[in-house]
Image (tube, rainbow, N blue to C red; front, side, top):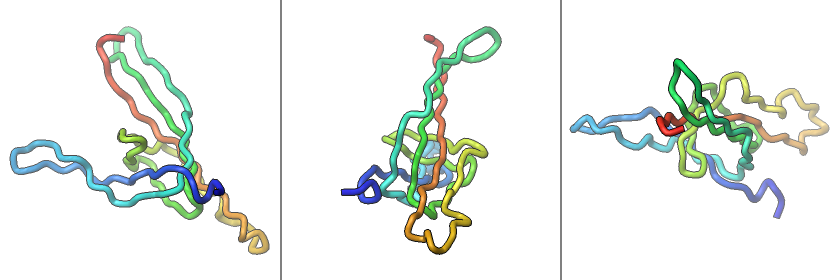
Amino acid sequence: MTIHQSGESVYKLGVAQRDEFDMLQDRPVIEEIRHCVVSPAGDQVVNGDGYMHGDVTKYQILAPAGTVFRDGDVVRVRGEEFTVDAIKSFDYSIGRRPMLARHRPKVTVTVSRGEVSDGL
């Protein structure tokens, strides 16, 4: 099995909606992106005077060639919601020479998630 046949799914999510009781609903899944390679890109604790304490988690996602991510898209990775970081997504397959069309590089994108905590 090659890397193009394995990996995990990442889900693009739609806009958050509320029900008739004004309760926040789960975001609807717009698209399932299969065969992605997800790896940690960073984890940091944010603390100090004058701002909230929290934790920021980042993942780097290698998605199949031709996958389109936009800055600010919300995706579900490993059960958690993350936001696509600005200016980090890039499709290396654009502008490739036709004789190398068999080689289709993956799309690279970095996503992050911040959580606020008062116990850090």
